[in-house]
Image 1: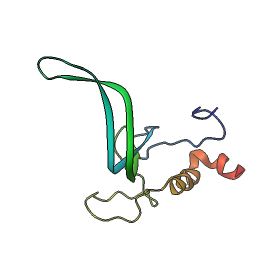
Image 2: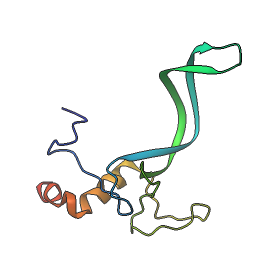
Image 3: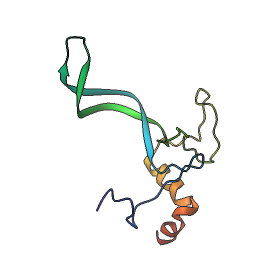
Length: 110
């Protein structure tokens, strides 16, 4: 079943910085629309969980726990400096994950 973390066909992630296991995708130039459920008299807003994202591009992939961003060589440089090695493509992310020791068995099968 897609999305099942323990499935043999899916790649794992282990953050080299903190050991976190969840990758998040950071996007730029995206329009996000969210429905408002309630607005109280003080102006506080409760949002519905439904969101629509339009446009945008992947800026980087990073560890959801600590923000360590994923690069082809594992080296971290300041994000305000151009770094061509930051992974911004899903295919490149999969290739990087396949090279990691914890996914070696899956790489051998492909």
